[in-house]
Length: 165
Length: 116
Picture 1 (cartoon, helix red, strand yellow):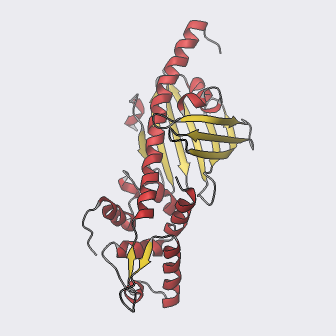
Picture 2 (cartoon, each protein chain N blue to C red):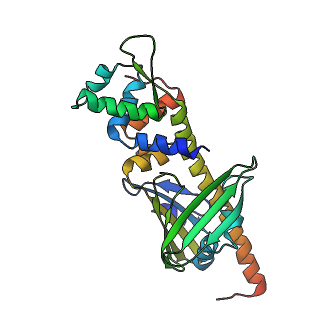
Picture 3 (cartoon, chains in turn blue, cyan):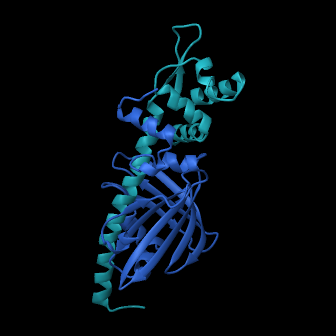
């Protein structure tokens, strides 16, 4: 992939039917990147989503089988939580954990891989969904490959475009 | 974000027949008979799918006619689309920030000496 050399842009792709991958090249060694992903001192500084969110809960039990639990608070006071279990921890190159939003949300398996060349780290986060349908539902905005026939038509409908019957 | 609504929508959308039914309804309201036509499936089996979609608020029944055509309800789908868009935006914004934060960590390390 030639995107690997580009610093400062996030690439979204679909490596398989049930996956979404997000890749970014960061100008920092991977041991720092790994630390930023796994240390509760660092996580609330960056894993914050859009402007105005905070992360009042950031619990990390970094060992295989250990749980993580994050809660975000938005400016309007509403909260959003996410939790999961670490499956594989291999600093500074690989981190595997489950991720769940609660309820009967599809649980995903997230794999973070870090490769370092000349002090720059290519960071790839791959999210594996339980089914293609769940993946497509999560990905359907902005990703062409995710548009199966039904979703493409629903997309058109949602955009207000005319849809052939 | 109403997670309950979203998870109901997601489980309703997880089935290809139900997605095909919704896709058909984007072209306009249709009766159960019309909706059953493309599927090698019994009327009751299709009705079962319709009930799931109805419970998820994805379709509604017209009151005007005896055969009560089903029509698409866009609100829950918009919520799913919004969620997907938010998810993408969340990581995009987070990665931007991670980038800056790591430059800050690098700088801090440089000042305080490199620890291996």
